[in-house]
Amino acid sequence: MEATMLWTRLAADLMGPTVLIDVFARGADLPLQTALHVPELAAFAAVLWHAVSVVLIVLTYGLWVLAQRRGLAFKFVLSGVQVGCPAMFLLYGLRRLGTVIDMPQWMIFLIIPALTRFDESRERVL
Image 1 (cartoon, rainbow, N blue to C red):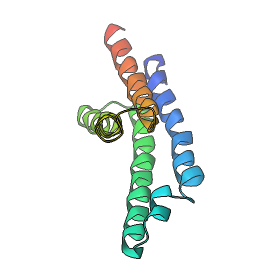
Image 2 (cartoon, one colour):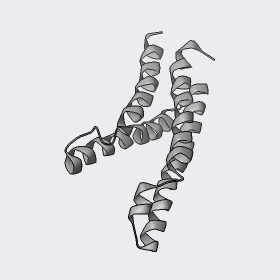
Image 3 (cartoon, rainbow, N blue to C red):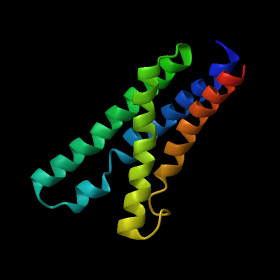
């Protein structure tokens, strides 16, 4: 593997524990699901939670592939997801809660694309 792709590989490696935390640490006890007393809404909340898990798994795989070979369209799709997630956490945290502290997931979602972009900036220099 080229040295310039090391940071993208690190980003992919960080996504692994993120997925495990999402699926196993929080997936079994969905706070939203337990707060919803209408069975249809609780089922819908579970589907949405696990849809995010699917996106995280695909994103992890996508970063691994991107670390092996570059593709402009592929990079833009991954970047959209990587930047869209923290943007939603920040926007909704600020607008609905008045703080970004209560939903700190935005931090890990920003660290991962930062590593990937760092890789790209080093690639242009080398």
